[in-house]
Image (cartoon, rainbow, N blue to C red; front, side, top):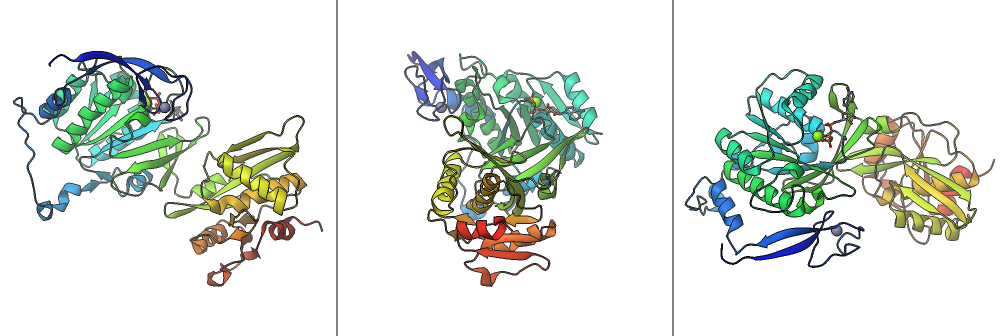
Length: 467
Ligand SMILES: Nc1ncnc2c1ncn2[C@@H]1O[C@H](COP(=O)(O)OP(=O)(O)OP(=O)(O)O)[C@@H](O)[C@H]1O
Ligand SMILES: [Mg+2]
Ligand SMILES: [Zn+2]
């Protein structure tokens, strides 16, 4: 390598923003105190990464084995998918594990990333595929213990406990598995990079090498990335642009359900979610998430309304709760599961168009189950739960609401209303507040009473009026 200039660079460990000097707040992701100094050897163009790519191809000479092909000659079997044996994961991936793809699974510590991938290994090895599980975090005995917890392994799964990336990539090249799991990317280190394992440069370098392996050897690789709130470890976000698919495991670690959400997918849509429950023997798919999310609703309790959002192709019902109390000091606003700005807007609409003086109140909004309702169709349920809490009158357990709320308080129609109503009716709801506009195209499920409303005031009057 010709005279490389040894410099140190500061990287945001949360989003990977690069800066020549230390900064308190990251301009990229607005997090505080995330910059860490990393020694970086700025290589000449083509040196380090070139060596890696040629090594991955198996040619020490650096001769590229890639050839130019006409698009029509590319066989479709190259884009083949294998089922992971886990229906909810296949759904989020867009129909199965794409051959030669690199998938990043991120999530908080202890959420179940290793468990999920071990189950994938078990299922896929049972169908005769060659599976290699590389762990840089746990000993073979620990992995064996988890494997025993999730059940019998019928196929053969190979294990490697290693953190040196060169050894890992040599092992992958000689073993040529169909599926390879790297748990976790933050523990891998390359001797090419002088910074510590877990730093932005290290995780990027490691991901780059794994990407080459996946593409050249046509191996489906899963990498685990820990989401860390602070500290010296780079988060999975710094890798998002490098990999094919990014999935995040969400949910409360203390509750048993988990949501797997796709945030990037080169081979499918990203709006599907997978819902799992953590039980003794691992993660099981939850086919009817609405039922799970609605368990244990308190009766006759003001401040709760059920919304229906579409996640991917599935309607999902979730309860929005609100607690509105007169403010003692400064009015506080907290929202969990509903966008903060959206919640503030809905409060303002209620004040101005709904005739409820909520502006001087503390308002807390929460969506049960750790779900995030980012669809405007949940507006009406949010508004009604706030109004119900403010007026201290319950809405009743048999009521759901669907509709977008506009700035002038109007209730706007939403897409896929018939699917939503079918799900609402299926789960036993008897009344549903809907936008009055466009109700003629509605197929009303029998036993479901529809309450069409034109604006926020009408909605409140229809379901919260005093007898
Ligand atoms: N016997 C059990 N019954 C039910 N749940 C269990 C049991 N043993 C472990 N768990 C759950 O599994 C979780 C750990 O899963 P796992 O190790 O796959 O998580 P992870 O995301 O890989 O964590 P890490 O970040 O530590 O690698 C625990 O938090 C716990 O919720
Ligand atoms: Mg783990
Ligand atoms: Zn940042």
